[in-house]
Image 1 (cartoon, one colour):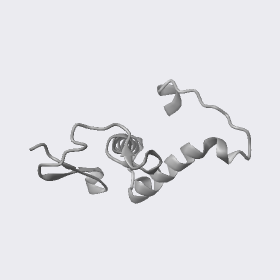
Image 2: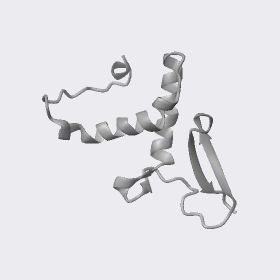
Image 3: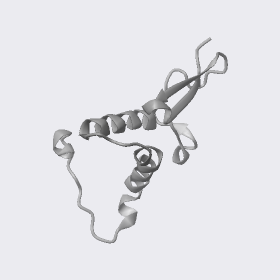
Image 4: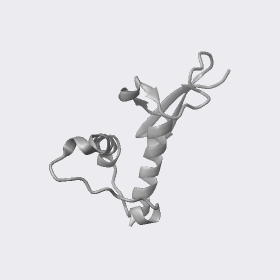
Length: 103
């Protein structure tokens, strides 16, 4: 099981308490609508690789409305005002990140 491999301990929530897990519910909605619903998987490894790529995109390249449209983990390219605009694609172009290459 994935939780055992990552040394993660689940927390059991009381029934009928949707506000206790609102953040993870929103994350799973984003994961499903932006990624999983648009792909076909041919095994557990392809699913794991897809989720790994999505998590990298989610934390390093995606703006977050709850953070005033900021990126969680800012890279060196964030805030560049000069240079060519480049596109980084993930998952065959399903996830795109546009940034300025350092001049």
